[in-house]
Amino acid sequence: SAVISQKPSRDICQRGTSLTIQCQVDSQVTMMFWYRQQPGQSLTLIATANQGSEATYESGFVIDKFPISRPNLTFSTLTVSNMSPEDSSIYLCSVHVRQQFFGPGTRLTVL
Amino acid sequence: AQSVTQLDSHVSVSEGTPVLLRCNYSSSYSPSLFWYVQHPNKGLQLLLKYTSAATLVKGINGFEAEFKKSETSFHLTKPSAHMSDAAEYFCVVSENPASKIIFGSGTRLSIRP
Image (cartoon, one colour):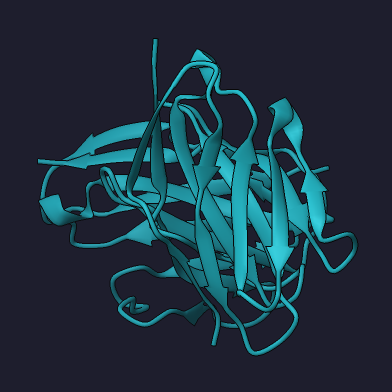
């Protein structure tokens, strides 16, 4: 199994600012995934982060808005840049260790 | 490309009656399929998964799902609904177990007393 922790668990931010979300896994994994869940919606994959290479972004998501770091096999960060109220969502990181595991999520509210 | 369609955004059943949540998938390969449940303000929990073994998959809390390749379906069922089953359910597809997974739009299950 895999235990995933995320920081912060929630935050309220002003528009135009940036927030960096941290994801820590208790085992080494090749790929880490970042998802967004907008209010009342399903989960949408933002990007896949491989250690040692640039993240792969899904359609509709760009590196300038959601820069990702993956410095080692147990850690990743997602930054939500120049935030607007439309970025208010839950952001989750995920890994695959025999099955897919999800972090508890970071609930972001942008005013 | 892979995709998944949940045919009902909301399903309401009476306690003690059967539950059916419908899911159809599209995949270029033999997919892995999953059902997740999300209770209000809680994290995602894996209910069950299909990875090319038995086509009838049993999960937790009395749920099961049947993989039907001819119909490209993976519907979730439970013989008798319980009040605690009220939650959001997501059907998920992956083209191989370790690759990215794609979520359906979700089905909200309500249980009437």
